[in-house]
Length: 174
Image (cartoon, rainbow, N blue to C red):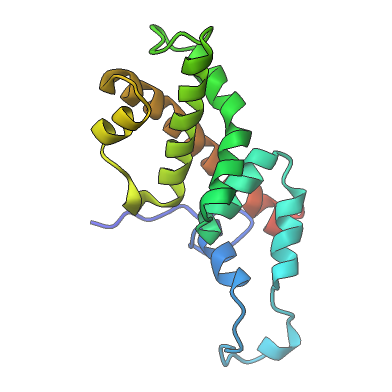
């Protein structure tokens, strides 16, 4: 049974703000034939870029934009670089820690796992099996899964707050 989504206070559109961002970034000449439509200006990519520019957190803005536009590998790498400190902060809170953060190799492994989590957030259909990813990062599977879950949870939280911030910046007046 389909659940009803609660509409945001500042919009009556039930769609996801990132879906709207992706649709508005793609230009189209089609106009819905509705009475009075020509008198109301439509949103443009400048409105989207202004709303993204008004977002306070650059990680939230980058994550929302990457997910909406299905970013490619270099953009995902830049986003993973931005997300590394926040993921590292959450890994330091874990008990027991899956890796020793005093070791440079383990910190580099956290970077690779962060990249995997960001990539899977943008391209969920291309997710690799944990065993293969753990082998590629030269980690035990249990440690990889623990780090991946922490990184993915961090990025999912950033994406959720980014969605709200984008909606507020676009329709709430910033």
